[in-house]
Amino acid sequence: MRRDVLELRQFYASPLGQAARAMVSRKVLEAWGDAHSLDVLALGYATPFVGHLHDSARRVVAAMPAQQGVEVWPGGHNRAALAAEDALPFPNALFDRILLAHAIEESPDAVGMLREVWRVLAPSGRVIVAVAARNGLWADAEKTPFGHGRPYSRSQLAELLRDAELEPSGWTRALYVPPLAWLAGWAEGFEQVGSRLWPGFAGIVLMEAVKQTFAVKPKGVRARAARPVLVPASGVASASRKLRRRLERPT
Image 1 (cartoon, rainbow, N blue to C red):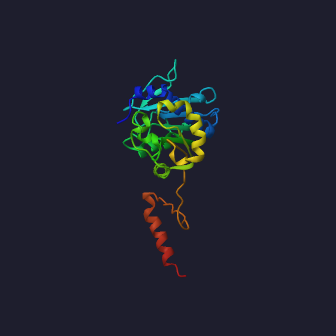
Image 2: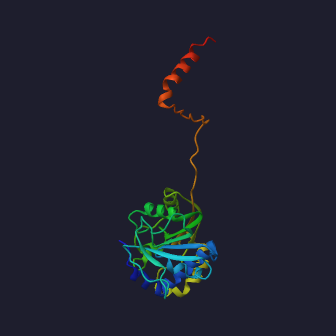
Image 3: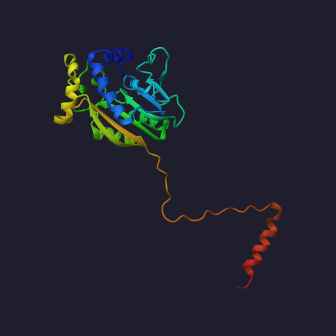
């Protein structure tokens, strides 16, 4: 069962949630820059990590699963919509960038959700999936949103993306600070030291993937397709006589 949107909002308003927001937002910025003139979708509860894109991207919208609930975002004018995981309310190939956070871990059909991502992603588009890391401390922290649902290892996440015809192109880790409120102020220090000394214990795995659009090619030498010749009904007898004379002509 998904966390309620009110629980998610409350967490990201806390010091620990603000630390998570800063660490993950930095990774998104490193991967995508400011997404200048691009269309961006935040799927699941990814809005805390795309706020810095508003001034440069052409469009930034959010889709939140129906089981989770939706909130007005951002602030005064709303760009968030409630959506079914397997039927996003967007046309094909609309978005250049898609970020998933708090999305697939609690999904009843993660592959189905990612195939919808494939559908609405532009052919040259890129998607980042942020999930709780299986070996990280955050996967067991039930007081945070990362402690619910299924965590993933890097290899498991890559396999899942390939099942949805999304090809992994890069990955990174984030959130090395232990999930304790009193350590939130030390998050930056843990991030710098943890990535060097204990990289396998990050709280989050982020994987970027691109859309697979491989064409199916025929095997072997292609034979020329036979084109049927239609003979009017009134000319069937005449055509038959001509064909008979050709067959009877001596060689």
